[in-house]
Image (cartoon, rainbow, N blue to C red; front, side):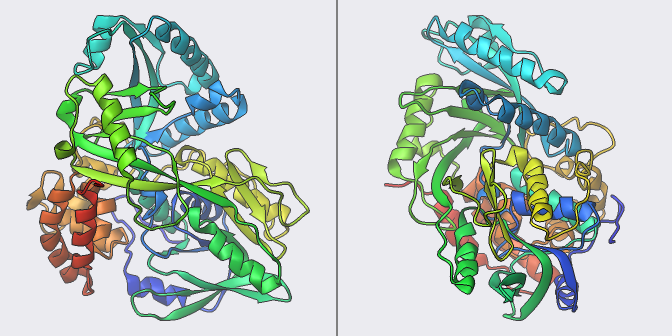
Length: 532
């Protein structure tokens, strides 16, 4: 098992990772996909003592897992649907996540402003039920607010017609950095994780899946990985691997995923200068609207629009942007306009089509996510949400046990497993605040020991942070650094573009490989451009 203290983080030197990948061995578990679900499975399996390898086609959390609304929540809307079991599980997982990574996931107060007489009692009663379901896992008590208390919480909310509000508690997090913490914690437990290493094919023998072939995207070198169990955790892209598996067996495979997209717009914090989030539970078209303070900015969103394609960098539709800006104008005293947008980004959601388990022996687990086992033994997981990633991972391993792919071992090992960087004391800084050394938790001292710790490229980003990302956080490109190690691209795309050449130079010095500066500049242009 690899071990590293909080003061001595594990190296992520790529040559060493590829050398391990080339070793002839049979893993207990191979995971394809380095998003929240795949990383959660890798960590859980490694924590139970299984040998684990994970390959990701791009960077960890490159897709949906870095583009969430940044909320760790129990799912108030499921309570309205009467899905008590799902809400109870999500509330439990919410508290588990906040305890295991307090520097990356924290409580956040939400306020629903009421402009109609019935709204405060109606939503308040429902949220009191939310509190009751949370029990000891609750983060704070729901409060009924008068008009002046609502304005104290939301100082720039539209005052005209405001009657009061309801305040309740959920959580928020830094999704991409949490994904990275999962990866690095799994590595500490002995798992081998390699980004920019897409799976190119599956290995079958006698109709059974025995491994996969992956390829180093930088060199083109291929590796055959043998494993007792293979998990397909590629999110909205799971059907690609399922089709390969079906073709090898001569069996037709029905698509599992019907993707939809969610758009988020980022503006300056002065549009809502508070540590409270604003929530509108039902807008003009029935959707929810959030205004969430996050890392020094304000996130507005989101949408839910069906898509037919599976673009890695999907574009927002004009009507989605118009919806977010238009609805925000109804609730904020000063309405954000197109010229106020600092960044706009889009994530794809893997909505699961109901279907029976292909294996025919066990029923698919479906609690907003689905786990299937094919006739060959390919285990596929998709759907779900960040909050319940840990429970999803347990379901995946249980499917491996039920299918006879791995020997059963007791669950629950990750319930109190703290992530890399977890500080000994609760952090003073909030996730509402801008990024900085505190974002690294107990590893802040290790960052500050590196060259360039006193050279700041921008507020919250130093040269040392770039070097730390290259040496210990799997970063390979400018995008890795400015989109996911630092969240600059998501917060202010123009500033990210200005910083990119200097970041590229540091990465070139550290890694000796092409940091793909031109690709990042094109991406930053997309993130700052609204659809016409």
